[in-house]
Image 1 (cartoon, rainbow, N blue to C red):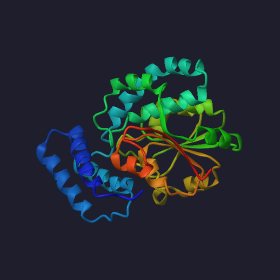
Image 2 (image 1 turned 120 degrees about the vertical axis):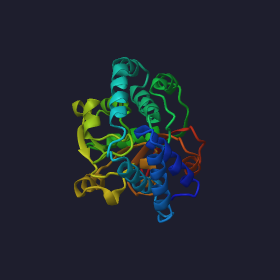
Image 3 (image 1 turned 30 degrees about the vertical axis):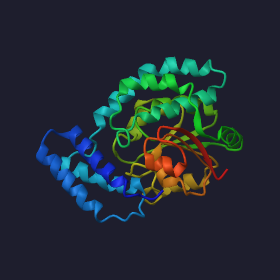
Length: 284
């Protein structure tokens, strides 16, 4: 997905809100805004939003002198979600379609996003979970997903944010296939890293691997050769979140995008409404 002019105010909003996570120093916050404004003038609109976001957040981190501004927030979110885990797992198991219920909950977890949803309150996840069991999908390629799962030896699962990793754990168990769970190679916003995935207990249900990328989305040109090999061989890829959709939506691969739409530009690209729930199969 390309970048639109509408994305630029959003990058500045993210800069301001992220800088305020790090400091109350208005001078330092202004410096971050100034430097991000400068790099935005030099970036082509042909780049995807996560590619620009990579440069924006690297700039913020450099100005703030901290490569992982959301470290403790990610820890807090994972701890909170783990307290809900056993009850949610029981509800999934007792539902009429545990796989579909697990998909709904994995998407519910996708609201934990400080990039596109910075006003998110972790306590509000309980409300989102309750709504998840009755989600009405704007795009619903569930039958395609089930059919594709039957014909694969393993699943490549592209993670998104820390915290929602706990909901991913429930879905992984319901896939009934070996899973390679791909996380970021380096901290970026509140995206999950290997440490975050281990905190959620993903290593108990899947093999955790790194994309090698430090971008808020699986931008293939920044990924390691080892990951690209796995990506090219995978017969089914589950892709969580907007960032992964933005960078992989034109890929000729068997990808299933799971996300809650949190941006009017992404909604327009998908042909849905902002706030809609998506299970979209591609090239299957």
